[in-house]
Amino acid sequence: MKNVILLFADDMRYGMIDSHEVFTPNLERMAKMGVMYENAHIPGGTSGAVCMPSRAMLHTGRLLEGLAKAGRYIPKDHLMLGEILRENGYETHGIGKWHNGTESYARSFSSGAEIFFGGMDDHWNVPANNFDPLGKYNKKIYKSRNPYNTNETIEYSCDHITPGKHSSELFADATISFLDNRDKAKPFFLYTAFMAPHDPRTMPKRFLDLYDKEDTKLPENYMPYHPFEFCGTDTRDERLAPHPRTEHIVKKHLTEYYAMVSHLDDCIGKIINRLDEESLLEDTILIFAADNGLAVGSHGLMGKQNLYEHSIRVPLIMAGPGLPGRERRSEPVLIADLYPTILDFLGLAKPGTCAAKSLVPTFIKEIKIRDSLFLRYRNHVAGLKKNGFKLIKYILPDGPLVSLFDLTKDPLEMNDLSGNPEYSGRITSMLSEIDSNWEILDI
Image 1 (cartoon, rainbow, N blue to C red):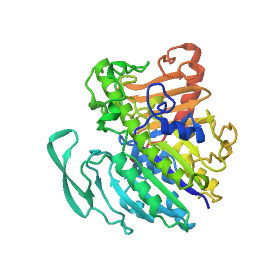
Image 2: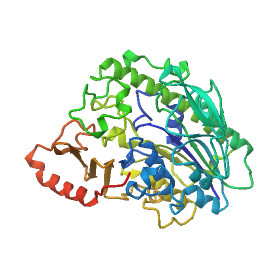
Image 3: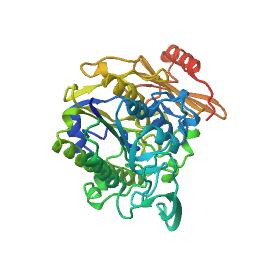
Image 4: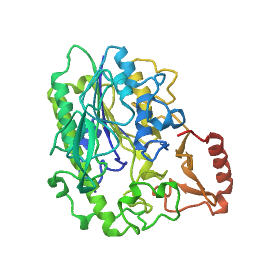
């Protein structure tokens, strides 16, 4: 049986790998080892904490409408990837961030280390837990500084804090420790979920020194304000920078964001090097992906609570035995597709609870596995990507508002075509498809 390693980033948007702007040599090396999916997506989110439903979809193969309470917990009848692999003789080991409840963690993993139950925290003082097979956590109370106000402290229920060690290094070292000390008689599924490059954006200074803020380019779709207010414009993420979004503040955020990505890349490089040293790459499918993208100044937004490309598209690389090297795929896929893909690759049947699609047929050649993508953010924004166009429908206090983009000609979504009568038929057709798929969820 082949091993599986899934490295998962937090808030890392597409376009960071093979970019002239961002230094990511190790992820670029990994892309050359396998297949990079250039149109990997999440279908939006049913919570302001978009990473919560995103991670629930990853581990269950279900889509947004099939989750319980936006992924706050995972019901026992939603079979998780780790559960299935455990039942088939795998050692399943979890490291890092888990945002879907403690009970589901115990079902999914047979062991774990440096487990962080939450959405975000101080990267240098991670409130971490040791693995408990019964799912009983929150054993002690620790005090740590508030990452947004150094004059305040926050109390955490956790097993331990390792002060002064960055989260990316903490989780990478735990990953290498597992590789060094695992039961070599059993195949393993190793899930390492990083907290980076999620804010607060702090990292070792040498990675910030890689960038000059004055040389950092503004995104072409930078705006001081979003053209109108909707439910995604008043979230925690949007309060990270003042209005208007000045060029200075956006460049500062982007520079720190890129530095976080470069530090994460460096830590991933250490993991890949250890796999190489142990000759594990020959028997392991190695995956890198992320839970959602991020605006960081694009369209006047800072966060991921929207349906623009910068927020719903993410990196996805798969490498290992049976996969070609230096390949790119442009057809749209979902991060949830990793669930049936891994099972298919290992020759295991996916359960009936899985709604995602296997990517195994795409390993060798470009194959379209879906004709369209239905998108949503909470119960107030819905979208559809189909035939090179994207339609977004907003439910606003004064009534619905629609935006249409030709992604082939306008990939940065800067030219709204909704007022052009030439596209009225397309808008009517896409709206009908959105409305037929849109149900109000109890989230």
